Length: 180
Image 1 (cartoon, rainbow, N blue to C red):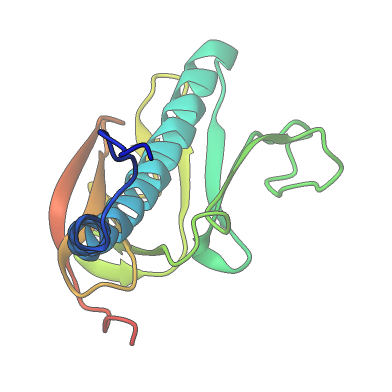
Image 2: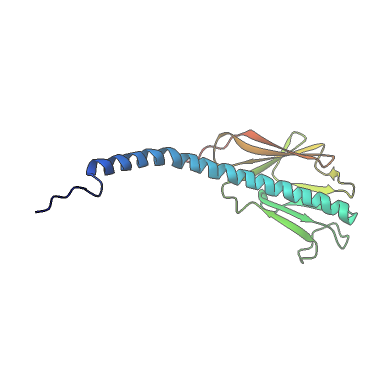
């Protein structure tokens, strides 16, 4: 009779230790991963917004005429429309000839936007970039705060000065109640 000199496989104790360690790592890692996802959604939303406003400013300078930025019909939380008045009627024509870019926040689930023009809260936006790159219609300073469903210092803020210069700030206090 042959006696095996080498055994293969795992013992039950070894398997239970590995499963316990894996459970502890997952219990620590999954909440951190959710926070990372929410932080990235806010960062993407503020970058989309800053990109849309930068595009509007650049188009105004390039075209040598004013380019408008307005919130969508649902307010700032829906997104922004960058457009120019091709026919001079001082209104947006929904025929596809005036819209330059659409910045839509609906893909950033849970992200809400609120504006503040010179200290006055606003849920909509209507401003114009001049051919020189300056902003009119947004007061001396327009702040746009983006938050998600977390309460605390998780928000992002985009400041637009009358000169057209933009600055982003992180760790802005959001007043929303955390989702349960």
